[in-house]
Image (cartoon, rainbow, N blue to C red):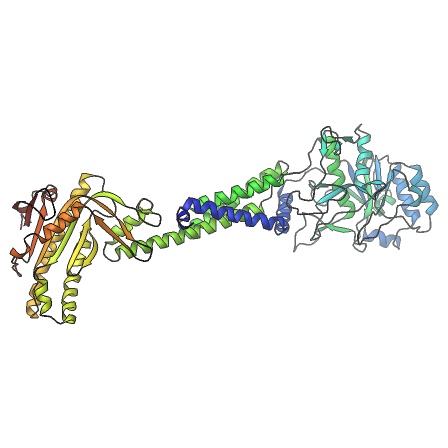
Length: 639
């Protein structure tokens, strides 16, 4: 598993799948239902409303002032009868009485019964009830007729009405909703009657539009109460946009007949003291007047049904559960893959916000097209996947940088460290530097007569003397682009041209030149160091250097606890043999020429004419079958 997780892409996929499974699990418990319904409400509010006032529905409202003018509540039956008779004279297509009349309110019960039975366009209400809510019967005179309907409303947790009802049944009788009765009465005059859908006969069809019944898991709902025949409300009309007249205005004859003729007239209460108020998706917290009256709510439902039958509007559709789950998975995987490319907090913020914006645009565009696409679970999948993979990549880079620093420590230049880090994707494999074959120049240095010197010094004095030497020589390698691979007692092993492989002859030549320049700089610095050592009466230093250029293998050796970067091959062995070649014959001149620099012919071929070299000969190096031409570097010719 650890090996598999070294692949960033595979890690991204595994993390994305884990996020997906967790979010789907939470979704199925309903954890996101409230947030998703809030997003649905935002979509309702943001969608353009129908700008023109409805020419099909008119409201006759009983306001607080109307109740005060009448001097009592409930309004007596005589007033209700007078209102119904007056409206009937204006020839509306249907009249909806959204005021309960199950109990007589004298005077005028006989008058009211006469009006109700004489005008079949009048639809009165009852309350179906159920659960903890008691029912309210219709006017007794209309019992068992098509002039009664229920005005029950489905309220979601949080108090918002998002669904309308068409039918309810008590096991014996199927009842029509108030809105459906009125809409069917209006549509009948247009020659439209409800029909079964040709494909799904159990679904009702109005005109060319089939109204699919709401199911318990539609949209973001989880195990919602889907009793009866429900559908999603779209609230296309803006709040308080239906034409309305007060009861007092109607009774005073201030309403023109053409204002009610051929329309659906709803009679209901808007007075605050009666409390027939509801919240809708248009309601927003911290704002006043966020509720609409029951009569206006029914007007929204009726208007939507009329648009189904007359205008061909389609009800809001929802994606299937499998499609939503796939959408969550895609967003999670995309978030994980995108997270692989993020390297900073500002990019994370930009990408996260950009992804959420795209999701919001997709969801809103779909909503405008009549499809409710859930946004909250996909958005959380996106954010979590991006965040987790970004954190994973940041930790991975931290580990890689730690490996890099542990491998090379302070023994490379800042420019080279930056170059290695910029090319880390090519340099690292499986969390460690990848092995590669390359052409580079290797340098070995060793001190002449170190054993004899160490015998004459105390351990502490020897360490101080040796550290002074190493601190003087080490920067000269680094400043010339070399990498110090290791310290071996009093010896230094360095390479020029690693760990980033050279691809051109010019780069390989530059590495060889840098190695020789570094060796000459060591000699110059060693002369100064010996002068100080002489003044301090400390042993002076002679040094041998071997340099060779060629192909070699470079890579890391060890395990996670101890990892070392090194080079191997015949080129490395040759450089080591050059350093130790005939070492006993070298007698350093500590203050003039304390250093012997031997190079192979492969390195000499890369040097320009500015260097003075002296051939040592074709010599058989220990451990090698072929002879190697050896040259001693004297210095630069201008010197």
